[in-house]
Length: 341
Image (cartoon, rainbow, N blue to C red):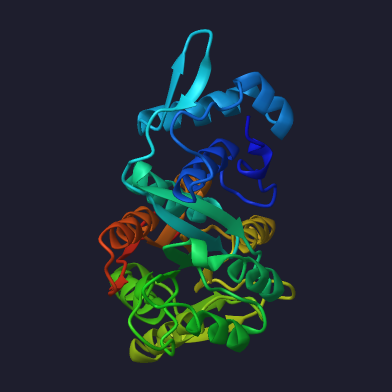
């Protein structure tokens, strides 16, 4: 029997579910011709012991291989490779800067739309340039598509240079478009400057009872400066007083002010400060929060949100991968008006 531990591998640093990693390993083994027709795979028990994963994980991987008619089983004889001629799935390297509630929506939508037409190796680089570089330059030749969410706290210019060196027929940028990358490549992104400007335009009627808008924009963050440009353009165009603050520490909440938060922690602190100062949200001060979540429907009878359609972002990225398109597609922004204004 072949040494399947050299073929079927688990990467503990990958976010990709382990059963999918096993599924991907077998398909790549067939593609590389190290696994052949009629080869017998280890039993569920033996492979679970060898890989130190649950039997359910192995069973689920084997069931996925059965679905694509690569694997079969016979009682008393175990599992064997029944077919090596199948439509090769698209191999994808997926790099997210972080995992959050809306990033999970993107991933779930992407994976659901791709289905069995693709295999995904999914990693989080935590906004760290060195981690990003290490993951990106590791065996990229084995991937037919490289999908990147490119947000960095530092070394952004160096990161751009690395991205620019990638084969453009493989590259898809997601969430953020880097305009100075050369060549033709795919991108499914947020238009940060236009998005906030048009969102605030839609809220002009609600904003009319306030005189000042303030946005909480953390210093040295990966957030696009386009957000600030769009925010300032709106305030100047519609004659609002405005301010950009790095954090709420030292901020005196003033009636007649609308606060826009990007980070969830700032929203919690803002609400706590309002309650502590006996200010009614939606009357004394207004609150607009980036990125729709289920909790924001409930908090203080509803928080007004401005948000990209993250499910659509995942779907459109998957379609771009499967159809091998190289276009730049801006995802529409949604405004949900609730009691916080």
